[in-house]
Image (tube, rainbow, N blue to C red; front, side, top):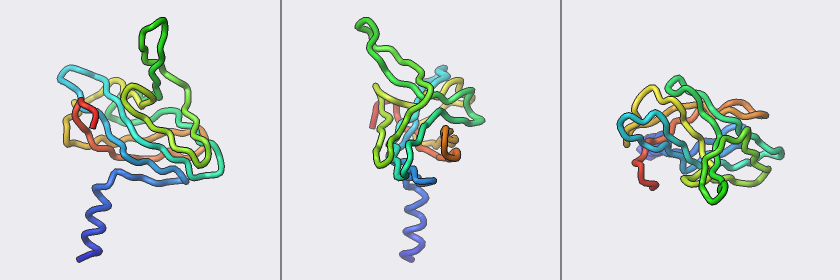
Length: 141
């Protein structure tokens, strides 16, 4: 019984570990009707001896997944694409609303609260990692 409960609990946990990279506290933002973009947020922890560089992602459910950041330009906050996000060995980078995030561009289906969204994270120097994140409301958790 305990083994079954542990297995069931692990299926609902949103922590992933692969190739020395831990992904925790991840979620995708739900979108209102008619919107074709969303964003994914998470904590990325590098437990390897080398710098890992996140360059984006792929999914059959979107046109593109890009790494973005917010930047102040002439007193106005703007979102900008960055070519890669380097995560130093032993460090954690937090992707969060108003900061670094993964932009999901050209959604092919609506993302509703309570669903999940599967995609692959693409890296410059380690294998891609498949993840499945819960979809949460527009208001940050």
